Image (cartoon, rainbow, N blue to C red; front, side, top):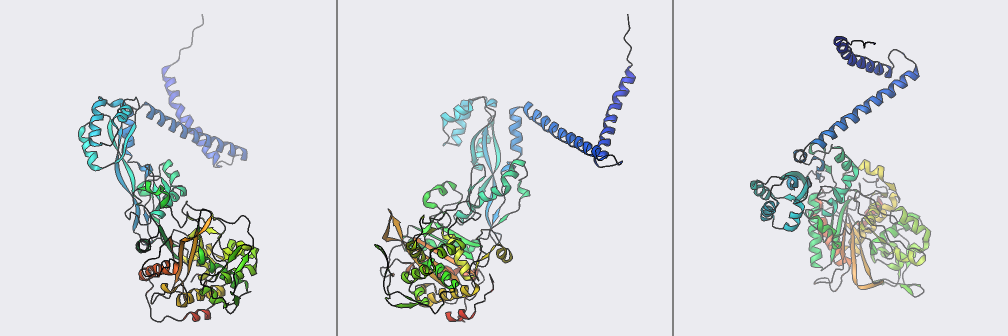
Length: 594
């Protein structure tokens, strides 16, 4: 019989103690080889590095597996309590501030009520007590949910401190509170269309709030790195003071002229920064459900409209920049243009040969259409494409609309689009083009974020010459002195602009009684800095407008009031040394985006 050899306990223990040392020495050898110590062969270094990576990943996966095992073995109540202790860090959002640092959106802590059905002792008692504090809870539904075998359920998100105190004093086991971040907007309606909104989980669902999430905030939430202390504020180009004035004057104009809607914006023509934007009717950003009402859409980015005679400025810029027309050119406006049964005539017909400035002052449809037709359909389409009028405008706001462009574009389309009918665009993209007409000729994409002039120039594209830009400033100022824009000529601010009155399409036909009036104003014209757009939807003739409901009687004076109020806020003080419009023709070399 063969005896099994005896194994000594002491040598076995020594061998066990020597095992970690051997592993450690082996690991050190792999690390040394991976970093090329000891001058091993190249293939040995590569193999050592692969082994080292495998060990690192294996360690990470073991740590994750161990953590999951701990969470799986813990009681439901313990998990819920750990969730509570995190204070909903994953739903924190950065503050949004205006250009002067004033808070437009911020997070506040609020309590949310949850239940742990498995820990409840008496469901009926809990239902009775909770509905006494929160009477809008459905008792039957609450009883059904608390009678399940689930470990965690939401009962009510965002309760008041008073409600939290009352429920806490009930002393119900299995009922608890989680501290969450809730978005609040101190300005209420101010800038609501720009800021957008968040859902119950504090995730952006519209406006700048949604843009912030698309810039990586959602990924940071998932990784657990988006805490309150780790986020810098988002600085917008909006000026809260200017925003208030714009909304205030739009609201007054909407009421005075009995319009169904109003909208407007203030843009820095040198940088493309949107300093203010409002669209009425609007909503309180603290009540995001109202933002879903179709009546409350942002008409400047989401809506598309035929912009009427304000679009004529683009036709004039195209004609002057082509070299075929000059300020001294003349056009025959003695008779209507005919395209079969379709006729183009002037609202206030002069029935004579007009100089090019007179075509602008009298807003002649005939003269404007003839300029566009003489350049040709292809040239017209190319210019509008170059100035960004035929494609969707992209900004930080996710909400934007595609222009409505004719499927078949012939001469009659060029004739009507030349004076603002037949092409529907988002008003903000029309503003972008007009900015280029006055800032020296550079098309600068608009932005809701702060931007330097150097950054704006880098993003800009030349679309017309500085000489053409100077001539357009002359025409816009001349229109304020002698034409349909006289009511924007507020003393001291040297403003200019163009009126636009478009008949709305109702049931496929142009209506003579339902109008969309717009006015594009720029100031000061000898060194353009800001553009103001005002748009009124279906304004009515009222006392003092002599039966007229056109832009010169409603949108133009509203723009003048806005300019007189915001000018000093933006550092532009009224002056007495206002030169005549003709002086602007002497300066045809305005530096790009001064």
